[in-house]
Structures are given as C-alpha cells and as structure tokens.
Image (cartoon, rainbow, N blue to C red; front, top):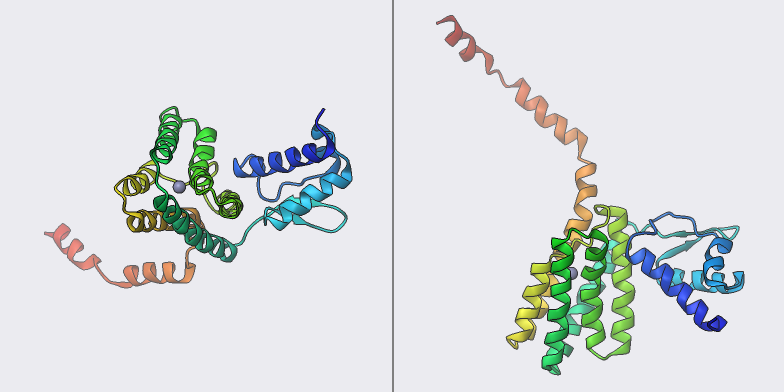
Length: 243
Ligand SMILES: [Zn+2]
C-alpha cells in the first residue's frame, strides 16, 4: 500500500479529476468519512485535501465540516476565463519559441484522440480530452508554474460549465483546437495566440449563454408582444373575406 503522503496525493487528484470530468457536480456534498475510505486516509488528511481543493477554488468549506463542490458565479466565471486566456496565449508563445517536431506530433496525436471520441459519441472521454488539450499545451511549455496554474484554471472552467453550461460539455471544438495547432506549425505564434484567445472567448460564451437565455427580460419581452397586438391589422383581412 502506498505511504500516507502519496495516498493523500491520489485522493486530491482523484477528487480534482472527478470534478474535471463533471462526475462530481457543483453543490455535491463531500463527507470526510466517505472520501477517506476508498483511499485509506485519515480524516485529517481528507480535511487537508479538501482545503487544497478549496484553495484551488473547487470546493466550498461550510460550517460543521461540511464541504461541497463549489458553484462559481457568472462574475467569477468571467474572471477565471480572462486570466486563463492571458496564460494560454503566453503558453503558445513559449511553445513557438522552442518549437520542436515532437511538440507538433504530441498535439496532433491528441487531436486524433479527440476526433475519435467525438465520432464514437463518447461524451465522457470527449470532455476529458478537450480539457486535456489545454493541459498538454501547458505541460509542453516545460514551465512548471504555467502548467500548475493553467491546470487549476482548466478545472475551474469545467466546474463553471457544469454550473452554467450544458451537462457533460467542454464546449471545446476540435476544429478550433486544430486551427491553433496549424498556426503554430506555420510558425505564426501571434496568430496561434489570437486563435486561442478567440477559442476561449467562444468557450466562455457557449458556457455562459444558456443562463442568459433562461432568464429573459420578461417586461421587455411582453411589451414587444403588447405592441404587436395593439397594432390593428384585422380590417384588411375582414374586407378581403367580405369580397
Ligand atoms: Zn479547447
């Protein structure tokens, strides 16, 4: 059996992964004893794992030791996407500075897996692979800090989509990912950064749009109907019938 420290690490990563894959939903309760059992770790270590997830913005810690999966607000969501765009643009510039064929091959292989999951309609793998494209870019920069921070922001985005987007959606488009890679291959880092920025704007819009649709401005909507119905149109119709 692994030592306690690595079992703690496994528990932390497992919870993070379950949130990334949207298997653990926003608001889900995370009781200490139930979490500890599968990993064979003490409540103290469970609490530490939950505190670390709280620092990542993924878990809310309530009173009486009740932890739940976080529910990011729209304002938080916009802040997270903004920082993520800045970091991912920079990550692409780093990749371009030190471009090697292996980087292209790794990203190309990943895109193939994404396409395969899409064709097989495997939603769970599709969501995971879509996020992992971004994690792979971060990893390939070889900058540990970049990797850790983008990793944290990507998981937070997954949570944002679980709250505000469609169920089991990464809202990433494989074609948009492919366009980023294509620009990198052409040796055009600024275009790759622009395309990534655009892609993440689209992901954000797709994630946050449903809520806007769900809550229309009822007054304005009904006023439009009132205006339309108030406009007399009946007479010409009646006249034509009488003819
Ligand atoms: Zn994407």
